[in-house]
Amino acid sequence: MFIDSSNIINQKDFDDLRNVALCTICQGIVIEPIQCSICEHCYCKFCLEKWIKQNPKCPFRCEKSEFLEHHKIKTDLNILKFKCYNGCDYEIPYKELNEHYLRKCKKIDFKSKYLELKSNFLRLKKKYDEFNYKPKNIEYNNCFISKFHHHPLILLETMDRQGWYCDVCKKSRYAYDESYYCTICDYDLCEECVKKEKLINFFSFK
Image (cartoon, rainbow, N blue to C red; front, side, top):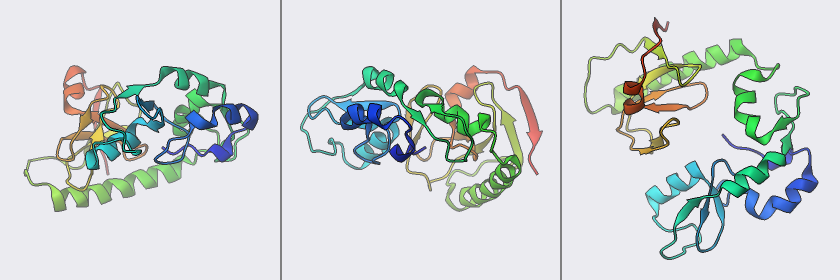
């Protein structure tokens, strides 16, 4: 998810936070902010994880830097409010952005979301067939509902991905690790977390 600073309503409050509120990598508002212990620049957690997989140093080439969660910045960002890019009239607090765009926005076109889900599912199935190097007997048309997530999840294992992290345990995973994946909102659930819960329901996706 990319948070565009141009959608901020209270720009004056943002001006006071601008130096720490923008991810140096994606240039959007930081999501799950991580700070370099040396240069003190902040990054989105996911942006930094992708960067480190290709280059273990800080983007500003700091030597022996540590990357720490910055809880204060995350708290400070809660004063920001955003215009909805779908066009609804709700002023969205920073901490509610993800929830709003997933299911609360009155302007969500659920029919289009369903068609997008189906299209993405077929695309990912094709990618799975192309890149999966450990053949398994998997029913591709089976999804399940997890108690951790409100959208259907599909089992995904494809070398097309460049690594990911579980949205429950927050652990980084490799491309070849199995993911229970949401094609609507890019939510990932690792196999370990799936084993910790009882699956609520199985159903057929057609």
